[in-house]
Length: 260
Image 1 (tube, helix red, strand yellow):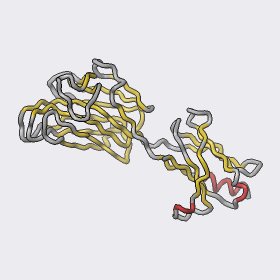
Image 2 (cartoon, one colour):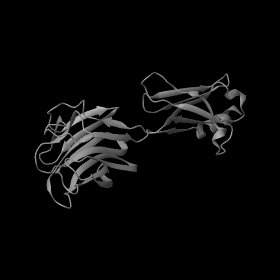
Image 3 (cartoon, rainbow, N blue to C red):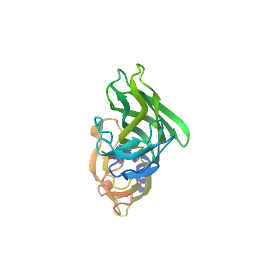
Image 4 (cartoon, one colour):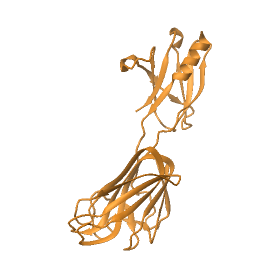
């Protein structure tokens, strides 16, 4: 009976992890450095590079202007000529956004900006947006996809349709990315001699998880009861362990693990 019970538990344990966003505000970037540069935030490393004459890290108000939402250091164009901003990531993503400000002076419309995403060189998708007209107006350019990606190109796609006083360049700040949830690897599912059920799994280090149990898989959420939190052992290892001391009192039990 114990062997059958263990197989059921092992097969039906599952984990629901909610992805967390990571913000690159460039305050840890080397001022005046020209791209390419690497920055790491929240365990994600981003390699910034560019086409043409590229970009460098400068104060947002270098020209004496303060685009809305910009502060401190930002990505700044190195010339008056258009250049793509290219970012490669150390981990697959499901969401990317970046605040941008095109060089425009009281235009009646704003440039079209485009972001195109790739996974290991294969096209995943693309998205465009326009800012509200103004002087160095700001807007957030975003791309989201259920398919992961690890490379994006931010491109000045088209000038303001109404013309005016503009240049084909832009500043960028506050890049936010959402890594894809890490796969869960179940390990060491064991029915101990004292009747307790113990299991372990691997995931992103430093995460928090709650274990839930149910005696059947009916869809009603009330069937699931919180048993407690999971211990990362050792801390920072990405290995999580949980022991259900009450398992010996149940003929059958199902487990799920969630991350807020």
